[in-house]
Image (cartoon, rainbow, N blue to C red; front, side, top):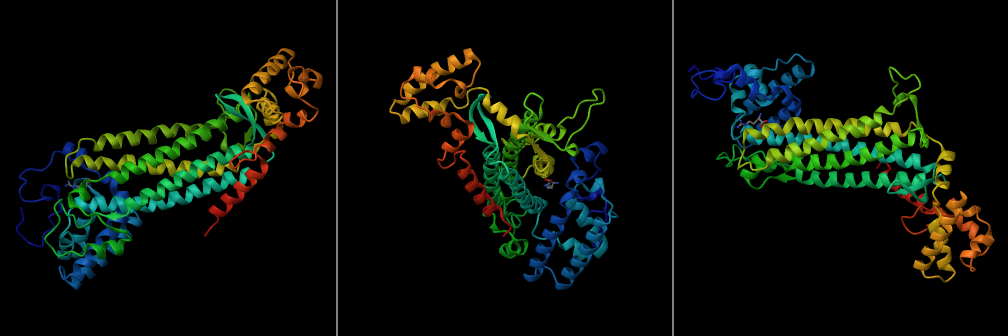
Length: 471
Ligand code: ARG
């Protein structure tokens, strides 16, 4: 143990904490406990946080102006070293925080050792992750807008394109392809709301909680929070260092968003199959088979569907990580990073590629329409027609069931039954019934707000375009 006060206590791991330790860590323990392999991606946030902390320490006369200058100079060089790939990350220095602090002290001496005054890695790491995640949240918010825009623009060309709407995967009623796509726009819009909501709670600053109890130095936490763009400071130091709700909330948000993506992906896979043939995908989003020369597979959509599993898994992992942890910081918390990082990466890539792929969807309106003509999609319209002629809905429903039964027996669509046959079911039926029984007549009739009538869907497209327009 060195007694030289300007030696670097972080220079080797045996001395990383204090003279209390009399033997070095075993190599296995070092490897097991280190996080630098994955938390180095927090480096920008770590330096930003340290600079804001140092600037406040100087303003409060806790460190000198010369110290602050030295810290700034050192951090500038470290940033440069990391950016250019020259920074030497050391496993024995455990994590991103100790690596950067050790290098700082190597570069600027005692000023580097003063940086950690009134701070602990516990409030430091919680601050770093929040800063890092905030930037990712903003990037993802933009990607969600991109995803919605791609779907809205695809929809804009298909307000009159009829497809079968399904319940129970059985043909139910005709809807427009645009209307179907806008259902996903609603989902991604809710995701965007959830993200904005969690950002408010994410954007509070733990720094100043120190190890757990706060600190005796006269810190100005509000000042640091302002510098770092936080909306406020965490109000309980114990909670500040132990809380990982922001990770749970993000993983929950990401899981729901991925589930939306996976539902769309599943439909794309179905629609592209020969049995549906509703769409084709541009070649650049497909892959071939090594054995079947005829194959073009929608791998991107399948992978997006599949990757949903890992994000949902990260949510489960994080929930389980936090369950039963006593206050305050426990080393368990180091395990928050990999699932969080992977959830962010997976969601970002997936949103980007799915939005891009939406532009590569080739719609086949005739195939959609042919499918809508199977399955008596306008049976409800016949019932509604009878209701308009004065029948109670339940009676109309029963009458139409008989008509459909006959049509199935004859292998014909309802609209193909002669008027006289239809009148056999109810004499109130007139020539005007055929307009009601067409796919387009059925769609046009659903003018209720949120319905599939082209005029309603066009209004929705306009609404979304305005909502999503660049500010
Ligand atoms: N690498 C640690 C983490 O990610 C930093 C905090 C360490 N704090 C401690 N008391 N060991 O959680």
